[in-house]
Length: 314
Image (cartoon, rainbow, N blue to C red; front, side, top):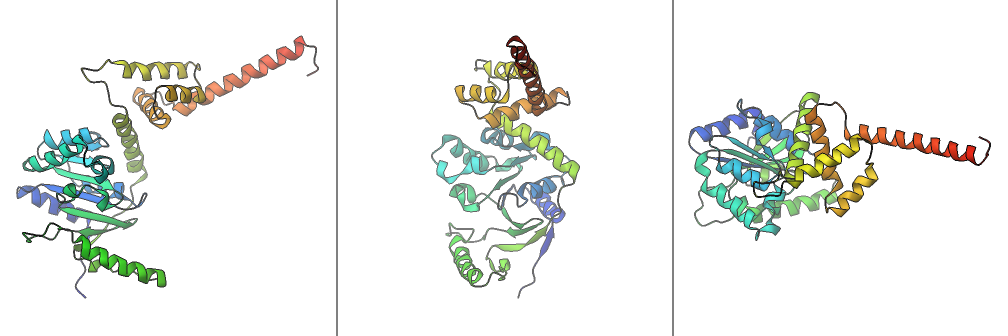
């Protein structure tokens, strides 16, 4: 059996730096099941670059992804949900076509671009061809490094999809017969080693979640453009003022969202972000709880008054 390489995130980062120094771009995809640690891996990876700022380079928007790739040089782009930007079922989407064109046209900008997606081959096939590295997270703290097969002029399938899928079929049958069967990942034709990584610290996790929620809210509810009507900010400002003054409860907020064709979770995320930016220390839940207490007290007060008026013993 051939020697199996084990990488650290630091070593993969150094290889990536060498690519940039040699005037090659670096486009990386990280795959794995939900909760497996894809974002943890990229958080650890990007923080090996001293000038990386998650506040500026993490995105959930295809439009923002395009801007980060097109308008910056020797920089970074981390799309934490690449599936929404490069899903093969949206191959007809003009924005997706533009994303592929931008990735191809601006490779000379020498940016390090990375994205997370549950399943590698759910991405647009033209996008897949652009990746220089694929990290598949097989369990928390452990990933399999794949590299495309190069030097084949007429082979369109640089990831050996047919060959590797046949291997997986054989392993799947063995796994069904023997649950203890260990998958020999090193037999993939694209296998380039394993990579180990640790969990985020509590402080890192809290900060990542804060930035993540902020960026998701921005992606789902973009700020009005110069040509827009400017009502988007007023919508959230008015909602928050009503909630703060206990004039709007959670059920009423849901009704407003339905009328305005907005997701309740997205609206709450945006409102929560505004509160955090204000630095008040209170959450949306705090205001709703205060409103519920006032409502319950008023209800009790009114009920007591009714009983007194009607001469009912308390």
